[in-house]
Image (tube, rainbow, N blue to C red; front, side, top):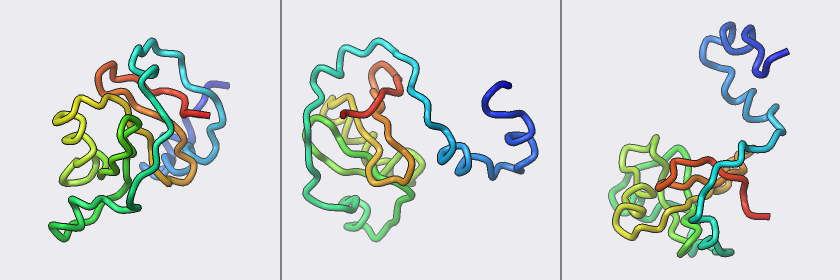
Length: 118
């Protein structure tokens, strides 16, 4: 049976995504990315997108820069501070930050979804 089942995707009226996030326990396809070598253990200095807080905005999710620890809002947010941080610094890899069931890294340069750091 293919995953996700067509009935789950088609019959959920767009609500299947949270279910799929919780249910999927596989590994990501190995995509070549030379930038993974620059990933290091980092810790953010805050638990919020400070740029959004400064202008009074909110965000749906946060991304942690795996080069310097900058914490910015995701690309679904109005301000996209994590993406702007990459554009300004060239730091290529971010990791989902404190999103339940979301354990991955993303390389902006290679447009690659990567396994998280152990």
